[in-house]
Image (tube, rainbow, N blue to C red; front, side):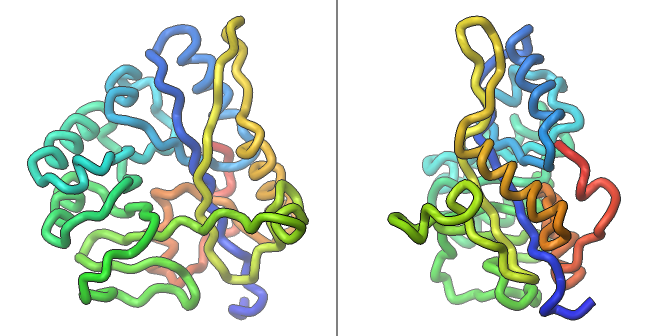
Length: 239
């Protein structure tokens, strides 16, 4: 398959509800597993600890606040707690700038991919080649940093398309992050409106073969293969 005809790669990230593993928690986890496309759930360490293993089978990224990004001690503590709660967690979302020497702490705790708003200008560049046009880099061995796709444009151009999102460019990478699921007063679980639109948009392009949808934690393997993800198997299964 040539690069010009290769499908786009889409990653949808959603903020996990801050709920315990009671009936409501189980309800939203069931809803998360039933979504039409894979979704990665961005969870605070307190939420991960509350679920006590109940998030098995759900792709989770640890939410790293600015204070932990800036402090090596806080980062170690946060990641240690996250590792204890979810041993398979391999992804993180960084909410602030991180000194270069702190990135090794992520690798030590099994984090292979970190979602960032922007790349730090530390002059290191990427130690490994990334797929052409993909906003990602490997500043340290064992870790890929991936930049979140900028928010949609306002006005008419931002309104066009399914859920305000345009046709994915062949061979491109889009990583989107928004609110996730919520529970009402009657404990019914519903999908946040923007995530619902994004799921419909991603499902539409997946069905057409113009995109594949995968988890954030799957990106390192896809990047290493030159941006070519498998067209069948776990990559296309719902979260």
